[in-house]
Amino acid sequence: MKALAGGYARARDVPHALDLLAASDGGGRILAGGQSLIAAMNMRLSEGDMLIDISRILSLSGVIDEGDSMRIGALTRHASVGADPLIRRHAPLLADAVDYIAHAAIRNRGTIGGALAHADPAAEFPACAVALGATIHAEGPFGPREIAAEDFFEDVFTTALAEDEILTAVSVPKAGQGEAQILEEIARRSGDYALTGLCLVKRASGHRIVMFSAGPTPLLAGAAMAALDAGDLDGAVAALADALDPPSDTQASAAYRKHIAGVLLRRAVARIGEQQA
Image (cartoon, rainbow, N blue to C red; front, side):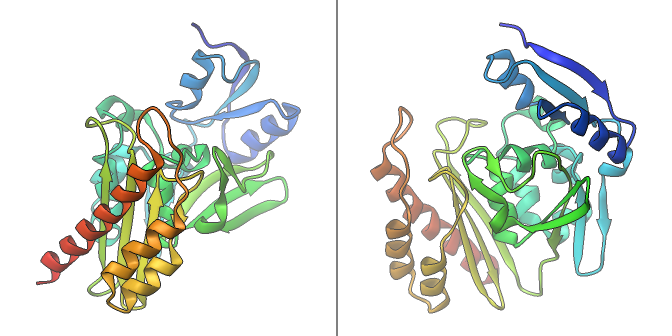
């Protein structure tokens, strides 16, 4: 089956892209790496859209050191996120996540901004953004806007991004002294979407636990975090199970996903212990 588009235009810069989006009358779709959008169009899940290609806007690519944080351009490819020395040093969770994302061809074309805007509940980057306390940068007709990652993901494939806005970057705080960042997931095969996944960040201020592929959005597990802060791993596992309401599907049952969540949390805690021993 072939994609059915209502038109195509290549944006010169962000203002031009916003003008094209405004002129599309609600039918505009931003094309960055195209790894999710084109697949959806090929399956006729999205058709008749006006494709607005932002892939040549150089200002939306790359990583900028901003002191206590890093600003990652929306068009930065997955592979570039995994290889960037600044990210590997200061946000290893993002770099590690790249190894779990699909296959090399996807990693070489897909973009971090596209992954965040697509908001697939089984994807790694949205969960990482929430776990790290990242900030999403958007730009629209009324200027730039900042959105906390934990407020950005609203439902399956649904975000706080307005119809007339473009995601332009994500800012991630640099890891503090002694900070640990761990990603664990279970998948049927390498490159498959996770059946269930977990991000664990241990900071001086406490733990951050985020589950993915266990509900409609990345879940920041507050009660489990509090239990882990108190040194109660068993309590954290129990609180995590209570917080989750995962779906059952052809890949895994809800009960299995709940069980795996606890297993992943124990694994992540053990890895942190090994790193800090």
